[in-house]
Length: 270
Image 1 (spheres, one colour):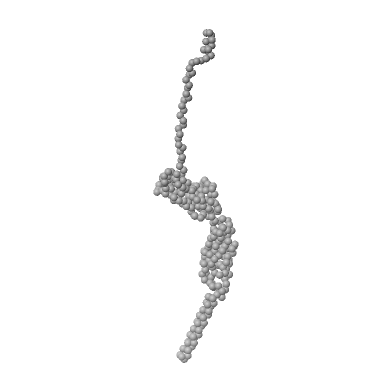
Image 2 (cartoon, helix red, strand yellow):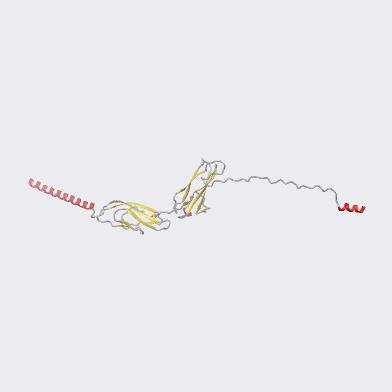
């Protein structure tokens, strides 16, 4: 009986269970609001996301010349809303979307673009008042008109005078003429002037305009004045001859009259 009680005490543990341990409380991470950085406007017409209205530092950007050709250096003129003091202007140039890393000045030499290219300037200004960026609209490089190379100080003849011009863009140049005396023409491809006056044409002073035109329609003009004599059968020439004949006849008649009077005076003296 004692042995049985001992076995029951070994097989069964009637002691109260140990208290349950609780896992340590870990505080959840603190919820923080994400910080959103305000983005600076990319052009002068954009609204600044600053929460308050402020004037643009860059008021306007203009290209000079307004219609650049392939042989014009392209510049930007920047209007800044700044009273004075420190000012730094940086210009990033893009040609057909490709940035010219080495060019940061306000003038882009024409060797960096050619006819048909689209050029854009992105202007950055930093002053004591702040910073601003202005993305100017792109400008297309247009056609360069021909250059007239002929420029004589004095024109001694029209027939055979050659006008020379070249197209900087490498195109073909044709020649055209307006004004001038009747009978004046020019070779469209050669630029050689021909003058075949009519015998009945009047003379006088004439203004002549020579136009050199390229394949794209670009034009350059060369102007000069010339004096020509009237044709031998022109009304003014005929009138001049009649006037000379009448004058000569009058002078001859006057001489005869003077001779006759002298003869009469001599007879009276006898």
